[in-house]
Length: 265
Image 1 (spheres, rainbow, N blue to C red):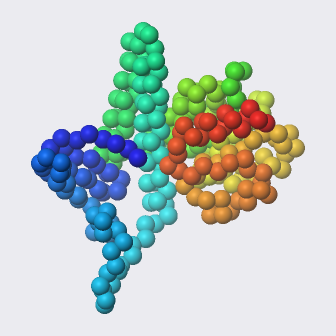
Image 2: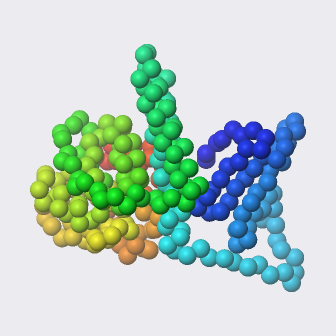
Image 3: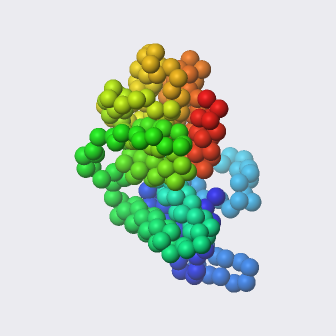
């Protein structure tokens, strides 16, 4: 749950969903809210969530297209990652004796969140469209050596940054093709974290390719996706998947799981 403090006339916007919530008035312990949403989005008070419609009434069900659901999950996942990175930096700041540098780092993380929300408001694209450099080689470290395969540039760098803060060494690839090219020239990492929907070579194709190669038998493979394994056409046992994380992610739970699993491997 994301908790925010708002004053009168301030708004919370979900630009990709076309929804905004505005604080209209504050009187004592009661707050009046104004909710603006598209017609196809149902808005109910919590006490009415189980309310049964009267006899003879019709309920219209609107289904969001799968591609749009994927974009919405990615947008929510991106903001969730930003907030967790900011929270982690703030915790490090509070724990440090001389916190000036760490506070600056945390402030920069917060400014990144604000910039991203402004991009959403301006309906900017989720990716920059710029060509990405090839993945960098992983250097030995005390934590696990990971390869993160994710086509969304912002999600990729945010999650990689969070995992690095957690003590892991992370290389990145923008899709399955880059991941295969990386593995051909570098030592296989301890584990891979793979998105499903990617251009050129998607997660399903990449995983099947890796599991057909004996040299990758010991490498753990985890999936991050807005879809379940069955929806993605994969069998977790058959393809020897070590974990499946649904988006939006809980980065802390993800990092803790990967760290524990890699230590037990």
